[in-house]
Amino acid sequence: MRIAFSRNVRLAVVAGATALSLTTLSACGGSSTSGSDSKSLEMWTFKQSHAAALRTAAAAFKKQTGITVKIDTYTPDDAYTTKVQSAAKTGDLPDVLEVHSDGEDRVFGAAGIVSDISADFKGDWAGRIQQPVQDSGLVTAERYKNSIPQVAKDHGIKQGARYSVPLTVGTFGIVFANKKMLADAGINKTPANWEEFLADLKKTTGKNPKTGGLSLGLKVQATGLTWVLQPLAFSQLGKQGYESLFKKDPAADFGSPAGIKVLTQYNQLTPYWMPGTQSLTIDEGDQAFAQGKSAFDIGGTFTLAFLKQNGMNPDDVLAFGLPSPKDGAIPKRALGPLALTSVSVAATSKQPENAKKWMEFLSDPKIAAQFAKDSSDVPATELGAESATVLGPTLNALVQSFKGTPENTYEPSPKIEFRPPGYEQDDAGAILADLTPLKQQSVQSTADKLRKLSLSYWAAAKQ
Image (cartoon, rainbow, N blue to C red; front, side, top):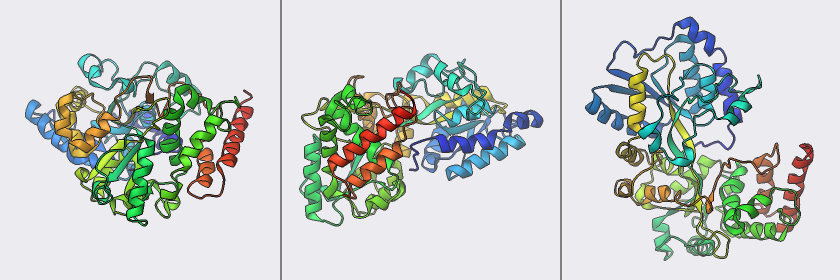
């Protein structure tokens, strides 16, 4: 799965790898290995789970256009970055690159590795992409402003430019359950609320104390905060109450009665954590679930593909958004999507028009639905109601987790930041880990520490 919480480290690596690309590309003359054949394109991806799905789409593209698309995969992510760096130096980039959205695409754009396609992404093509992520890849005024300092990783991008188009989207706070373990415990439906979810956990752990619990990669400490506590708090308190937890008002922050209530609810998971879950990485937590060591697993929409890679049949998995408390302000909460991966045209491509045709083809609803089924990943394309028959129940449940209104949708990456400047999720996550699963702090002491942490950030920012 390997989904990062902060892209700062990745961007630093990418920026270092591509810093010389502008001069290198100029020196190399911008050749491309596939440029000599007007009926052949090359695309690189870092997602092994996307490779077969892209090849299936490429076969359909060739049938429609006569253009061949060769798909090459380079993993893990660091190896992909190194490959792009090397190719940028020699002028051997492919025509199309799959990139990490909202960061890596702009770094590549600043370095001259990928092209600005803002003039082409419009009309039907733009309209197919889910509205919440249509600005992904676009250099908005705010993104341009943040790029102006020389130290910015994407320094050199142009306002209004578009360096990528979203290919896949995802969100956090998705629960996966082993259908057989549920059935063995007498559970035959998705929990309607937080209370039913806890009751189901009690049943599965009662059936098998060693394997009936909940796994989550809590070694990455921000997971408990961002994947469970925050969507839970949004549901319980509503948007305003949730955002107030991170502000300076003692009547509404984590030390307030509202904050205490949310922390108490989060602490209700303590009896049900899989043994040793605090020592697991995100991948290890998912692998434990795939190996039958837990009945439930918390991750994101992207987790399903990883579970499939580790031997699970998606049809054997029940998936649903983290349930809301039945007495909460938002009992029926949706989860907002984030752009996860995107596609870009290499600046050295001698077939940029064909490359853009291929990218637009991938956004076609029928092609995107088949790509989703083949990859067990959620496409950025807005799929019609009929796609449910193609996707199957598990993947369709992930798509449906996005369906909501602006008022009832939890946004994992808000457009307007309400937390204090410099806020680090891992710091808060470490405090939460001492509450659960480690049981080293009480709810009250945890609330006090979270309040103190938030105030320290506000003070440091002189706000």
